[in-house]
Image (cartoon, rainbow, N blue to C red):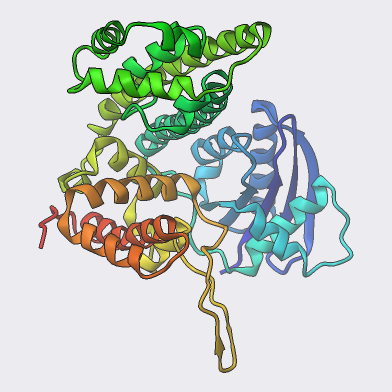
Length: 408
């Protein structure tokens, strides 16, 4: 069946469109602004070309470029003029577009050429799965789960910076595992409210134990032992000049405030995620240990499970949980790496859910432990990735069959 192919190179301010005929010849190309007027222009030009050529099918594709193409794709999908035709929408991975462009070695690098490459890639016919846009509930949930992902990443980076500052202020406390959680209330109170290691050392140990107990809301079973360990770590710490020490205290105070703010943001996002998730019936929450937040993160990225015709293998590749082959002739390499492509958000939530499942499900714990002991390096990362790959099979089957999880 003859189709019209439309490639759109998206930018923050301007887009470039290329309309390609079914035989690969050029129909037209034109620049437009990335706004409502530009989207209306694309729609009119595409409808005009379809009418002129007496075609009923159109394939429209853009290259994934941050969020700059989301509004355009929503507009084209909802546009009444285009809805009279058979349409398919694709969001192409930039790596895929770059690799396809390599078959045209003499092409320059500019927006009109990139739009041509996208259209020709669509015409080549190796892209079979259209972008999922049938249910905006998934997109709404995706906005929240991705915002949580970025907030968690920011919190992790801030914690790493904080530990660097802690080493400057009191190196012993950064080196020794004195507190069970260095970011708990009792630990942060010690780090923030004592100006220097000497202040900790000179304090009466019973008073320090009482301070730790009160700040930790009496949750510590042995505050006296923790107080002694804190003083021992402080005695062996470096001392900074007062001017430098004061600046470190100021930076640490700001860092602690930032971490508390980020934790509040994450808590607020998770509350809204759970509320939005109630609108999407699913069976993933029947798996012990995954919970609503991780389930929401997984389902928001998957959308309709039926859009993966290759089954759980296709879902695993979409998540980036597939290993590159390393063999030639009789040689087969032992070290293989995960592919670099794939949906990083789905991969993150699958790995987080898998690690949570390891703590709650005996079958997954045995599997993780087995894979952990198979190698001597990258043990946790390898075992977690393989456990997440195992979880993909479970996720696919539960969603595909719409059934509850029954542990073995």
